[in-house]
Length: 478
Image 1 (cartoon, rainbow, N blue to C red):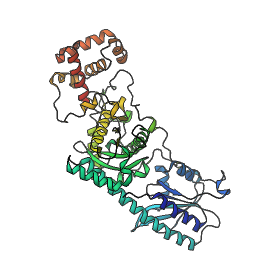
Image 2 (image 1 turned 120 degrees about the horizontal axis):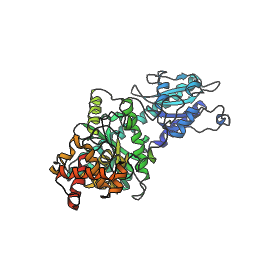
Image 3 (image 1 turned 30 degrees about the vertical axis):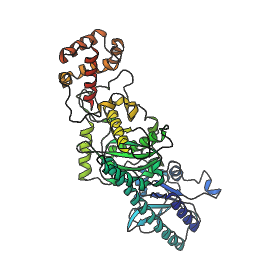
Image 4 (image 1 turned 90 degrees about the vertical axis):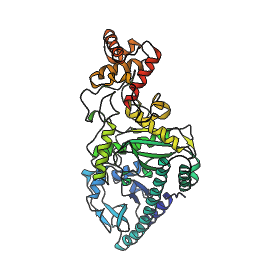
């Protein structure tokens, strides 16, 4: 049965605030805000005294990588007792801090923060507050264990074969989620994900509307992240878009910390073409609104984004996953026969009520992520209902053979002809629109289309031949 820890954290933080006579805040080890004490002093709300780092932490519920690194430099990750941190206006820390490390079985799992005031708490008060912090540590460990259990149950559902195995896995997940299991849900697939280590995945608390998440293999060696999202109704998709945008921020930050970035900063092969399609050719699909903003979070100290640190599980396994992820992603981001890492993408399945059809929802989310990686104009967040022909193409077995008629056109030497044919077919065979999209003269277009017919043996005036070539070119992107 799922438990709600928020109220327990708030009660314990309020208890510390009362013991010390000052409002406290609680963050987990990733500097995500869990609870904060109330301000009941007019002086505490004085704009000249209010600490901007703390204010932003409360407003955004997390801190930047720069803020985290700055505070960790005072040894708080190893501390066994209160740590006093002096003010540093150049880092945006205008008020001194007292940090109470929250430990469980010898490991720091969070932090309680207080702003320094005169005369400050006594040693006896701090000792009492540390005992409360120990109770918070046990609660955080319990929540982490519950989250790990939900991750295992979700992974079991999404990787189980059909029939009784999946039915049993769904029943276990339903029990773990409790009454929430009967409401509307959807799944998000983010790929490629930079690490198979569960410790490198974001917490469900940091992802809006997330009920559970886990890593799932993506292709032969790479990883994806699955996020189970609670919805208010099957007709309202905003929660899923918000969750997808948040997790994409995490993925991009982790890839960036490893020195691998998407888009124009990616290492691409020479001559990678622009995306196909008549109309927009940028990655500005349905998810752009969910990913807006500068990502400064609780900053003041340097650092942008959310969690720009190298994943905690970095090592041989992560390095292998990174290499596999980039290699796997490189097939998706250019036109047929091109390479280049355009960054991670997210796919969202159609919502369902209850958990019985999670297997089907996951296949839809995976397909949408594949489509967003293959066609930049569909991403960075694609919904299954909006990926058009990829709903059929992604259902084909990965090892299915390419149609032989398209083979010669997909050779690297004919990359520009392949792109011309795809744009022409995307534009419903309208020569004027195609020439405008490609920025070429009509006579050049006609010459290229004639060459396409010679290479493929297909007649572009024949509807079935056009359909075959169009699907073959789209399939090549996968």
